[in-house]
Image 1 (tube, rainbow, N blue to C red):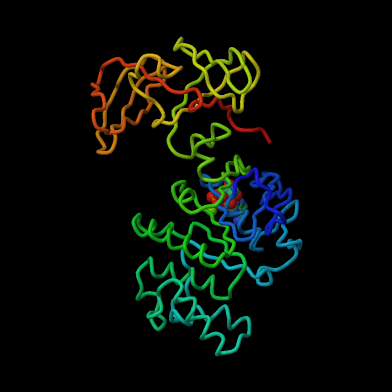
Image 2 (cartoon, rainbow, N blue to C red; image 1 turned 135 degrees about the vertical axis):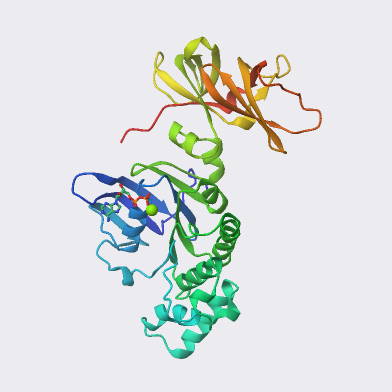
Length: 371
Ligand code: ADP
Ligand code: MG
């Protein structure tokens, strides 16, 4: 779902939600966010940006200082956590160490006073879902980290909640297992159609798993988009910098014509054209954003409208591409990814070279939106 499509009635709604722990500093500032039924929505942002606080308010373990949270049509600010019917998975699994895997899963059902038969069926189904059917009688300590995390996922699913919240659930796992679990959780989500609100600071994880991503910084959603929109169409410098790799060039706005602007680069680098995404008035400063794979070194004459002179500082051979660090218009950390295709041009460190790009691959972005 793209952010321009309407979603009908949201399943979760944050309406003008604010949170302060100390009565002074707002760690969540006027949050408005609608989440559709069945959606996989990720809150992504640096440490301290307010993601966990938002999840805890949705779960009911923290209360909003202002505003209202809705589940379906119902305001839930005053509903206690255990009456919200929400499943949760945390980073540190939080399995009961003295109970078997099956007993861990049965626990949330027993507190709901379910019959023994029902409990057995549901526990088995949940364990099968995460492919741990044969491990019901093991103790958590007898399982690997990945298996324990799968038990934690199964325990959140076992009472068949409509909504599951996950806070950095894969943070404790090594890289390979983390990537495998990302696909597993994504597939479970697809199979069950359950709504997932997922928190991570890992942009690759967010891009892999999510229908939409809300990028947080300093208690404010900077952008709410599909993964591809976030990468291809960042709306401000923070998002461009946080998602993927990004080259920045600063300059002054000389002219604006429709959605294209002309920018005079700082330090006498030259004049280039860019998409006018989020800029001020003529004469003001702006930051240009360029992805390293959209830049060509020594392009054929006339093939791209924007060219600048630069110097090749460092070449790093990475197999599928050569990571080329250049000095361009005062930026000595200007990265170009040169694909290792048949017949690609050979470059040398210390050489001067021309860098070029298409206007639609260069975005003029202001810094953070003000709140
Ligand atoms: P994130 O999950 O994005 O890392 P948090 O929501 O945990 O961010 O924290 C947001 C801000 O709120 C941080 O500045 C953090 O120090 C503060 N904070 C979080 N929990 C508490 C708490 N229980 N008491 C006081 N301050 C808190
Ligand atoms: Mg957190």
